[in-house]
Amino acid sequence: MNNRLSEASIRSAYEAARERYAQFGVDTDKVLDRLREVSLSLHCWQGDDVSGFENPEGELGGGIAATGNYPGKARNADELRSDLDIAYRLIPGRHRLNLHAIYAETGGQRVERDALRPEHFSAWLDWAKTNGHALDFNPTCFSHEKAASGFTLSSSDEGVRRFWVNHCIACRKIGEAFGKALGSTCVTNIWIPDGYKDVPADRKTPRALLEKSLDEILAEKIDRRYNLDAVEPKLFGIGSESYVVGSHEFYLGYAVTRDILLTLDTGHFHPTESVADKISATLFFVKELLLHVSRGVRWDSDHVVILSDELQSLMQEVVRGDYLERVHIGLDYFDASINRVAAWVIGARSTQRALLMALLEPSHLLRKYEQEGDYTSRLALLEEVRALPSSAVWEYFCLVQSVPVGTAFLDDIKSYEKAVMLHR
Image (cartoon, rainbow, N blue to C red; front, top):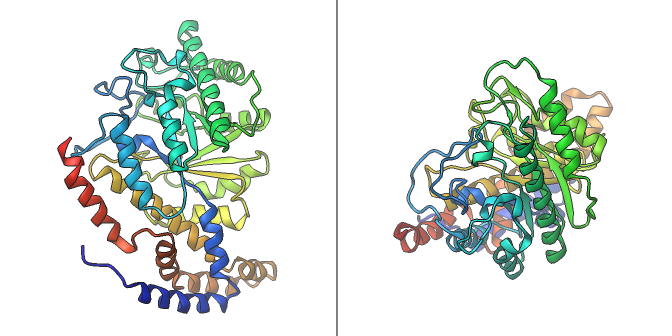
């Protein structure tokens, strides 16, 4: 794709943009220094359609669906790590990896999820150390015979509930091991698919069981330097359209009272709800948030993240509230209809661009107008900011971070696809 810009033109455009932003009191050099410090947590499951290594040919459960059959899907851990290496090379900055428990490497032996240990992720840990990545983690409470009823941590079957409690306990210990080994706190996030397709007669009992399970899981205190616990709500799912045990209200109350993180997945709410508006509201009461950045199209369909108004609003709220130190940003989508490496890169770069645009915003002026009651000037400036040359700043950032500018990253992906992915 012949669309490469010359270094001279990129630098020239950046100098003009720097001068333009300076007129609004924004130092673009400092903005780029701040952007460089923000690490996104890429989700491993984009690379293989949430298959994992436990039973790659098995059917997805828990209301999860990956659509498409684009060639080149990773079939094992080595292929998945190879694909991730390409993606990281095309995303400016240094970033993390978010692993699910079903990506354990057990040497071909069947290891039940409640028996997983840090050693089953030793190859991931070695790879992370070698490449300078930190790791986050998730229990996998779906795609398993003990989740077939639609209930896991809230199951009325004590044996089933105990299995998933023990699985989550094991996952916290794995997260702790990651944090200790890599010197970077691991966020271990719990999401369960539990709920009813139709209207339940008893909403209370499953939630009482879920509360009990979570308290058992969190009973052992783990140093927050190594592991942070998070719980992730959802409005509805396939097979749980009428009732979800782990609703937003339930998990918000639980996170506040247990002093853990609340996860806000941008695909887990009603399409007309603003997830951005929830950030400042919840951060008055929880210390930190985990954002799972996705894109739902009419439902939680996990489309690749794009530079939408919703994404920009999300990052504006994080920046305007000075929450970057309290908000962990991860990606969460899976598209099997396009090149899977490209999906990682497009989503990550879009998220970074939205964050850059938020950092470039002259928020001091906007707040000044608002405090003075000058809403006319506030609106005029908000509209003017939309047309400021953020793209020139982004292209310069890519240049100095030694990653392709514009859509030139597609050249690398298509070459890798031809040389590697199409031979799988």
